[in-house]
Amino acid sequence: MSGGIEIGTASERDLDGILALQEANQPERGGTLSATLSREQIAAMLSDLPLLVARRGDAIVGYLLAASQPTVAAVPVIRAMLAAYAGGPAAYVYGPIVVAESERGRGLAQCLFESLRTRLPGREGILFIRADNSVSLRAHAKMGVVPRGTFRHNERDFVVLSYEG
Image (cartoon, rainbow, N blue to C red):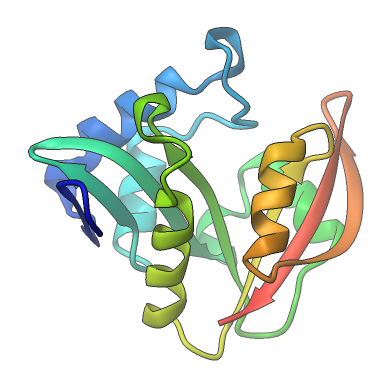
């Protein structure tokens, strides 16, 4: 990727940057994330499937999480999503994808997404997006992600989507 940003597979040294970016994108700070994952949950995901990070120098400016269903099924919103649509036998959970506010609008989310697809070819990725997050829904539609259903969790409506890697 141009502009001094490098996309790669995350390691344990990236956990602090991922957690900081997650915190900056919580609803109480104007973000649209629907869950807060602990360091332990993200570390478990790290040992499960590739997690991708976008770096500008030493700073994490974007990330994309992915995990097998058993690794994240205890997260309440993910459990609700999987009840609405679980996908095929090899399906994994994709997301969230988070980009620092300073880096938005440059195609970074698309680059992270394509990088994950090349690392997990032929597998179905399942994700959810809040129904009122039109920016993310439009971005994922451009990436070829297809709606599969809806669900309600914590007084909010969500869309379940999936794609084939």
